[in-house]
Image: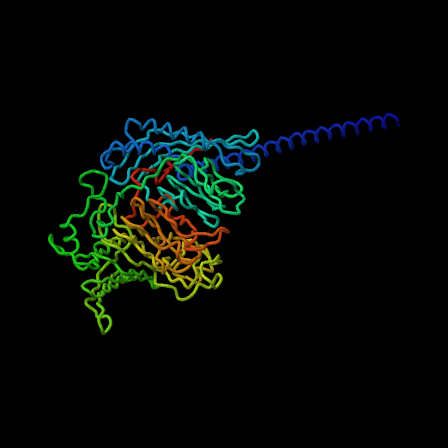
Length: 637
């Protein structure tokens, strides 16, 4: 009996040992499987992180590094222009520097863009990016742009714990350089006038801003983008009661004068920056209006050739000799629009009106021979026709002198080097009054008395303000003399509202289904001021890019110190001037006492010259305008 009990005990122990062995074996197998599974997951995570790095690197090459590429190219461009180079025949980047540029680009990318932004990845993944740039070389040359290319390879190495995966992408990159449009700045001025005036509290800038010299600030003007100057500082003002001591203005090589003047520089105030000159344009607005090649430069001086009398007569009348009377001319040939709108003489009034159904109307009024003449030009975009009606005023009202319809529309950009129909109104003279169609009534916002602070929205403009430019219109208005602004100038579609369902339901023509809005306006005086007239409305809305670049000229306000307070000048687009003008005054308490206080709102479509008013002046230097990486191969390992 004892032997049986002993045998049973031994058998039980043996079974237990076998079970323990099996359990241990199963446990070891399970742990191995778990470890293997976890390693597999980490490898998958590492591969995903590496792919994310490669995608980010492509974004770097196509967009993010563009400002840094510009910094590399700009010295070559500056030297090229100082040596009198011809971009149609000479490389802006000399051939003996191509390998140097490749190394500069490689160093820049590996220094500034070798990792993803913090917080991009989870699970403790890290990504290291490595760039190789080779065989940088020139491809195409022209008077206005050049294209270069380079081979690239990006290696993205990702690690998740001990798991590591790599992704390599190879291809070539197109680098296009060209003359940037002056419209890409929200505010650009040679002399900001800071020794005699200032940008006060209430002034708002949300785009790139630069003054070569003489900035002046008071209180807390708001700058949401980078502010720069070629000076080492600026004038900082204070008014009575600000709590500041000393002179009312003080030059400070810094970014504030507390407690009275502390501008809000959200992205910094860059001092001792390179000066940006206001050069003569590489595009002739007169040649564009006449349907001639706007960039023709037969003598190779870097500027478009002036229009000869023979060219002018041939474009307007089809003959080499003519007498051009004061008036309005739609440039045409054989019944088709072949240019823009050419005007000789003083325009007493020019009104722009969008009808809301695809038509754009320009109404010119001029006096000659003691009589008043009117030209109504209707651009019908759906019908692709342009109708010109000329009338003269008499005791019986307006009498029609002619009524002609042409095929085609004077709109948008003619292909550079080709001439042809273009969105250019060129006035050889002054424009006394320029405006949109006028308001339907008082603005339904703000207090009843003019000039005070108000709550009128910047976007969209109140319905009382009727649109001046149709959805389809791309236009630049150029005058050799002064241009007087008499009213609002806004677009049929507000570029800032195209993602708003409520706005699109009220403006169905503005629903572009994701297509870019191309409506744009440029207004420029070649030799005089652009001036807001004394009869202009309170809280005026001005959209587009406004330029007055002749020495000492700028955007002025007529009788700014003696007219009443008129609220805000809402400029949406950009302002380029030689000298900044005073446009209003404020009292000791900071309240507006006369003229306008400015609000500058950047049209983001102008950034990097992505959208430019037709034939708008350009800078003389060349800069990077487009980066296009073209991947050819992709490898994981």
